[in-house]
Image (cartoon, rainbow, N blue to C red):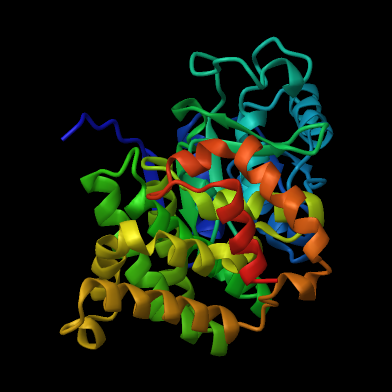
Amino acid sequence: MTGIEFYTNSHIISEVDSMRQKLGTLAKQYRATSAIIVTDTGISNLGYVDIAQQSLEEAGINVVVFDSVIADPPIEIVNDAIKTARDSNCDLVIGLGGGSSIDTAKIVALHPNNFESINDILDQDVSEFDRLPLFAIPTTAGTGAESTFVSVITAQDGSKKAIYTPNILPDVAILDATLTLKLPRHITAATALDAMVHCVEAYTSRTKKNPISDALAVKGLQMLWSNFEQVMNQGDDIEARSNMLLGSTLAGIAFVNSSVAAVHGLSYPLSINFHVPHGHANALVMCGVFSFNLSTAAPLYAELAHAVMPSQTADLTDLDAAGLFIAELRKFLETSGLKYRLSELNITKQDIPVLADIVTNTYARLIATNPKDMSLEEVTNIYKEIL
């Protein structure tokens, strides 16, 4: 076995209503005097920012709110958030929302360092940068951003850029399922399938797969798989929501320590070029990628199948168990209410060569971690299968 380095938060809380009850107390433990809440207008409109602000102010902490984050946050938005934090002399950064808000907060936490724009540090090693205390409070059960040390932002040329270092791993992750109760059905589905992809790609990574991430990926997938239909059909089930949220966090810890792969490679151009939300984009391409990988990864997919469907797969060969696993994932997608053909999203046959070229060039690093190599032609064929 090769050596393992493994990172996760120093403090994870998974408890209903924990943001209201514990945020202020936790902030005081980090000696915070002025906190910035990084979020988006949707979260503000739901009243969640008010709850967080009240908890912090009751603990004697000044609060400034930056709620201008948008999906796939561009550099300009991140720079605006940094300026807000600097102008207010914030000494605690809180990411509240989905992956975009939390990823933005991770970069805002680096603001004490001397740089004018994120452009100045995109290609730098920021592992030794000073960082403010950083809390992450997810409002979706999907990205796992609360427990990852990667921040994905959109560069000025439209490409996705990643800052990847344990230095931006949140100190505290607060998993409060009450914040996911108002999620619309389609967002519940997309984020849940996103988290399942994280588990599967973590478990099958050919570069950084390790026993610790394997264990978390399996447990995370079991929690997500067994609660998916319940949260889709009974969205106010707080226990199911809690299980989905914790499963998503376990998935995040797993994949950031082992890597994601070709599903993400094929999904990124859909998000960048056609504004398909990240979780939905992952769900669109996952079964095509997993089917392509069968000749190499069937034993690993079979192990996951046995973990989530033990009775149905007990007597099956690895190939049959893996096939059933992929078929069930496809069924999850098809019954989710999400669009599952590219053509339904106004993506045409003529767009596919451009998409495939982006995958094999810009995101070659994600093909490198996939269990099986992919050529330009093979990427093209996967897109064509879901057209």
